[in-house]
Image 1 (tube, rainbow, N blue to C red):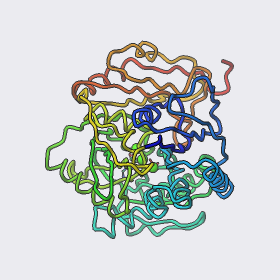
Image 2: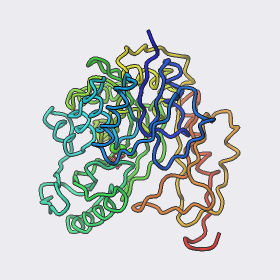
Image 3: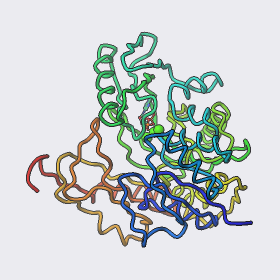
Image 4: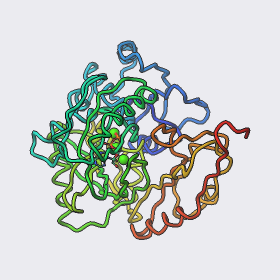
Length: 415
Ligand code: ADP
Ligand code: CA
Ligand code: CA
Ligand code: CA
């Protein structure tokens, strides 16, 4: 068998899991970098054999260019971990006859209105919701029980996701979310309004192959109550009673069927109403968190999610090999804890040599300007760790809560 080649869309080099997975799977990567990412050809990950600069904002031109490239030097698959690009990748795969999830499924996984309709049609747990199609549509939310959550139909990173407590506040919230969509997502957006799901949040990592879904891990994601929903922690495996684990697995497997996802990875987020009934928030047809999900699964159960997801994307069978796992894995997202120009970040550098820390991904640095939600500028850093147990991970996170602090000067002040 010759070495397969995969086109990988928009993966940052600072997030290494999928590059390492490709090396383990023996798959070569043609990387389409993000437009803002500078690449030093001398420091490419081993698996990357080519860097292909391509402007994906013009989808027709990008598809034509990929078609030309495929004719000249065929590749075996195309994939991305970047949620907004999942439908385009599915479309390219369809057009070039490569393995893929199909553009219908990609749409259903990305558009929260379509997802809710599909889940409801399949009889799964869905909160009351109304869809708002078009930039000016008004909504009749009188059938919904407040509080509700307003969100962009195809948003990500909780951008523009807002809790609204009273019917009288809804139209102001809609205007705010539309403004956020225009400035941050660069487009007027379709929206969804849905009932607020009270309860702790969980993320589920799964891998499907030929219609068979394997749930790899269920992790705790905190209990954010809004009005804006910053990401905070992720710790797996979650300490849950067996009956609840079963209920979550059933719901997630059924959701795969409802949206038609038969092959490849999924990152599913859900909340447990009354602490036990799983209601999906959303499902992403990709390895989650730009690869963080691989770290979680590897640390919690020893599965090689990144390598197997890539194998499936080039039309091979997943190998389902496992290594001895640490027992628990975690991601801690450093909270902004304020806003303005960063003058100092305390408590991060000393983590680089910490025995539990596998990766420290620092995104913001002194000099950068932070705006909090709703005008979100991004998270300062992620701390990825592994532990013997989830309880130890929790203890480590409490330590980080105490030890990491960011100092700010007011925005506009001289640094
Ligand atoms: P995004 O694609 O922006 O991540 P999500 O649907 O995942 O959108 O929403 C982001 C976060 O907002 C969720 O992780 C959750 O904390 C919160 N959220 C979204 N919808 C609801 C809901 N119906 N009830 C309670 N919280 C919600
Ligand atoms: Ca999403
Ligand atoms: Ca989400
Ligand atoms: Ca989330």
